[in-house]
Amino acid sequence: MKKVSLLSVFIVFLQVFSSQAQKSSVINEVVAVVGNKIILTSDIEERLTQMVMQGEATDNLASRCMILEENLYQKMLVYRAGVDSVTVSTDQVESELERRIRYFIAQFETQEKMEEYLGKTIPEIKKEFRQAIEEQLLVQQMQDKISGSLKVTPGEVRAYYARIPKDSLPFIPSEIEIAQIIVKPEISEDEKRKVRDKLNKIRNDILRGSSFTLKAKVNSMDRASAEQGGELGFLTREDLVPEFAAVAFRLKPGEVSEIVESDFGFHIIELIEKRGELANFRHILIRPEISDESYVKAQDKIDSVYKMIGANDTLTFEKLAELHSDDDETRFNGGKMFNFQSGSGKFKIDQMDLFTYREISGLNPGEFSKVHFYDTPTGTKAFRILKLNSRSQPHVADLKTDYQVIQAAALAEKESEAISKYINKMKHTMYIRINDEYKTCDFKNDWEVKLKK
Image (tube, rainbow, N blue to C red; front, top):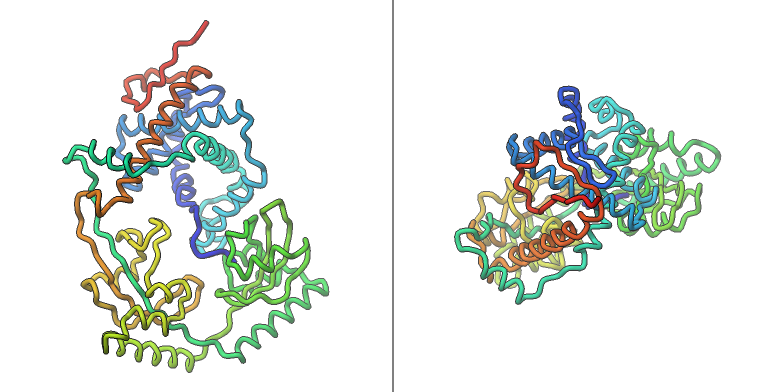
């Protein structure tokens, strides 16, 4: 079973397909050439459409110039990857395709709904995106070679901050820190036994020759993979929850595991194929039913915890989280929630789900929400209390309070300088041509090359 948070998403995937209809109205001509790579009008217009949809750009020449320069740099990296013999394997490309498509299917709930919306089958989608994914992976590898090892010292951060004009300092929006106490309804041993009996029967049927694929489609509660016959696609150990990975990666091709229990429920797993650190699995997931009595007991427990908050100096929210919360990721940290997007405990408003924000939006720091029912990331339901630990006011960046933000900006500047040096060095090693209509662009880098005869 995949971890809840994915490192990559496929939002652009939808936007690209949404802009396909515009292709027919665009005269698709070559607007630039880098080495043996070309940039088409459609490359510029499709990206512009995406950025306009996201409110990141306006439909004008300046935006097109910015997008063209991004493409020039990416094509340069892809071209140089060929010269430097930097490659990505078919397995890497296929794994990334699988990962992104799996995420996208989950947004539509079923493969059929996605295919109907896009008007394409999975093989057609893969074919259309395979080259783009390969180029993205090559660009990432080349980018890592150029700036992946760069770091900034505290002295460089301070020097960077001192150079910023006061009226150009970045504006920091409000950030929120939250803690939680979660109480999950208990699953009875009788319900667990029923699920184990059902999975054992399914497993025995498969061992006697029944189709794992068909059994997954009919029985698995992981609907995204069930539509694929239980298939998860090529994944690494890090893509899977530990309980699942520990068993799955010990299997031999075609072998079906014993029952595995995880936070998602109970699984049986089949290894389809292993390629180095990647492996492709099928699984069938079944979650036990939770009785009304269990929900009542869970609510009674969290109601009693709610009454204890602030009742005396020793029973703080943090201590109650440690004693009573069923969330192992936060209970020993005072219930503090972690933001994987920022790599810290701070959340910007747009980094929170709407339900959570609604519960804490009216709170002052130190206050806590009422008990509420919510859907956990693993697909089950639980009761929760939230505490607003802090809410910063929107402000102009300050070195003392916003060091990480300024550090990131200083690193970005250093990376940008490294990229400019690379472009200036490598542009003389390849043919570069830009159409006249873009010659007036105010590029960040000088792309002009005087060709040697």
